Image (tube, rainbow, N blue to C red; front, side):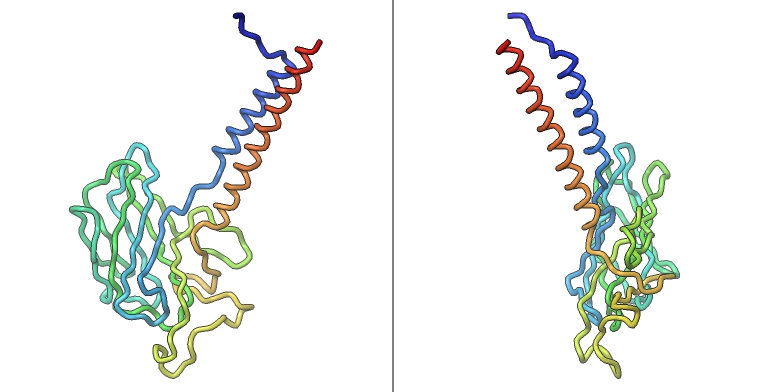
Length: 236
C-alpha cells in the first residue's frame, strides 16, 4: 500500500510545531543545583545535622570537591563532618570548609552531611555559598543570593529557611520575627543584607511547567489540524 505524504499545507505546520515544542522543552530551567536540608531547621537549635546535595550536571566529568562558605553566626570550629562520599575528607578554612576526594562518576550527586553545634538565634534563613569543582577543572559557583522582589538568580546559593527560635533560645531578646525592612526575613550569610529566602526552585519549576504545557498544547493543536485536513481530503 503506497504511503501518503503530507501536503505542504499540513507538513509545514507540523514541522514548525515540532521544532517550537523542542525549543520550549529544552529551554526549561534546571532544578536546584545544590540543595540543603536540616533535621532541626530552627533558629538557635543545637546539634543540628545539615545535609548538602550537589547535583552532578556534567556528562563528562564528576564532582571531586565542594567548597562551602559558612554564613555569619556559624564558626568553623563548631562544624564537624558526619558523612561524605567514600574517600572524601574535611578541610577547614577561615570562612568555611572543603570536602574533597576521588572524583565521582559523571552526573553523580555529591552528598555530604555536617553537624553544627548551634544555629544563629536570630536568623530567619542561612545562605551557604558553594563552589563545586569537577574532575575536568571546571567550577560551578552557586553563590548568587536572592533579593526581595527579584527573580531567582541564575546560580543560586543554597538557602536553609529557619523557623523562629524558641523563646529560651534567645537571651535578652524576643524570638526572631520579620525584619524592619518591609517584612523580608533576615538571612545570615557572607556579604549580604536582608535578601528574602527561597525554598528550592519554585520559580524555575513553575516556569518549566508553563513551558511544557504550552509545548504540549501546540503539538495537540497541530495534530487536530492534520486530522481535519486529512478528513477533508478523503471526502473530496
